[in-house]
Image (cartoon, rainbow, N blue to C red; front, top):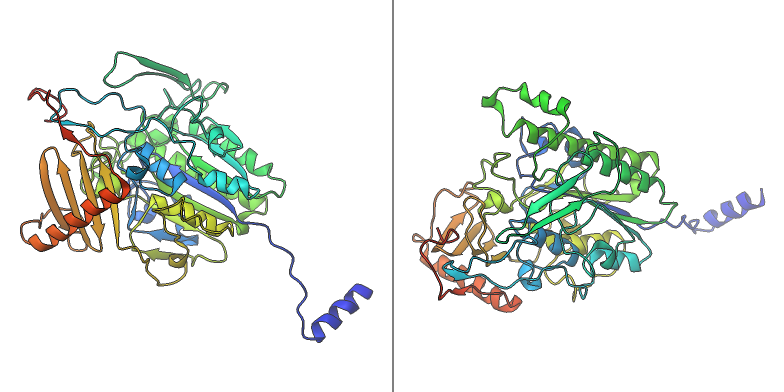
Amino acid sequence: MRLIALGLLFVLSGHALPAAEKSPMNIVLFLIDDLGWMDLGCQGSDYYRTPNIDQLAQDGVRFTDAYAACAVCSPTRAAILTGKYPARLLLTDWLPSGRWDPQAKLIEGRKLRGLPVEEFTLAEALQRAGYRTIHLGKWHLGSEPFCLPEHHGFDINVAGNAHGAPGQYFYPYQGNWKIPTTTHRARWHVLPDGDAGEYLTDRLTDEAVKLISETDGKPFFLYFPHYGVHTPLQAPKKLVAKYEGVTKAKRQGKAVYAAMVESIDQSVGRVMAALQQEGLADNTMVIFTSDNGGFYNATSNAPLRANKGAYYEGGIRVPLIVKWPGLATPGRVVDEPVISSDLYPTCLAAAGLSMLPSQHLDGVNLQPLLSETETLSREALFWHFPHYNQHPSSHPSSVIRKGDWKLIESFDPAAVELYNLKNDLSETTDLANQFPQRRKALLAELEAWRDEVDAERMRPNPNFSADSKSSR
């Protein structure tokens, strides 16, 4: 009675009772591998079944003009964890991509073979603030002895190693892979244990649910980069059969790929249910995105042009959904261009931490876009890929997007393309010759950016051979 009386006296005297101190926001970051921009129901697909991800979009904010920092995987992952453009990091190609073709027309730019330990990653920033940091799934940013998740701020690492794909999605998950441009092979196990018939996406989700139940009130950062929906294209037979029943004319992609997408959706649903069951849903920010565009031999990225590995929209525009309870306006759709590097400062803001501008040099906090009609002060986004790869429509190139305009400077073959994305999302009409002044201005801005980040340049190759496959 005395406590009630004192509380009533406190309120009547014009002072509010002190609120219970709220624990820091938990963070769950889903990074799906090779998921295309059109591969979700909420993105407009009427083929792929993604009810849980669609619900996440209804409960959060969906970005229509979100971009991966690179058209292939490792550089995007580095950008997320460092807040920097891949060109600034000198980590501009997937790992380990083998040697450059010694007879190509151009000598490729140098690149790092792992995420530098000198980088103060998002995981380290959250770990220092008292978060339990969990890496669960694909790492693909280097190997022992210095470049695994545990060397970059993660307390727990489940299934993360140097490799970009499992040998297979069913236990025992063995890999036996030829390293490109060499005669060597890599052999590995994604996980050391499992049950016969176990599916990797489901197993990783089991681990996530278990780890969420063990948080014991401590804030956590769950970085969940799924191996799916990367090749090899494999999924449970029942799910595949569901999509094999769809007529080929109505399919957006392969039936097995659609089954893989649905398995990812089931994973998201199970994690969201675990957060709800543990009473954590209202204090957990959830981010869902992809590392690059969809693989050409798995899905269609239409109306976007091209696919993974290319610097047309189909290679770099990706889904992005952010659910921030108490801040993000449910169902809001944002068309402001954003990029992978922005996730670092956004997560710091969700954790109530100060920005680290000397670290996330290229990332911008997306918090103002989640509930208001504000735009970002940033004027342009940039990409730089001084390498060859074998994906269709791919060329070594640099890109700038500024407003509705996008310029692509290809190095081999040498070319400059200019598109207005507002009027031509599919990049069908090259306007470089119609707007020479805009072309010149954007090229100058792109060159200035390359100088600023000290981007690696390609150089003429004195050993060039017209028979080189890279330059065809």
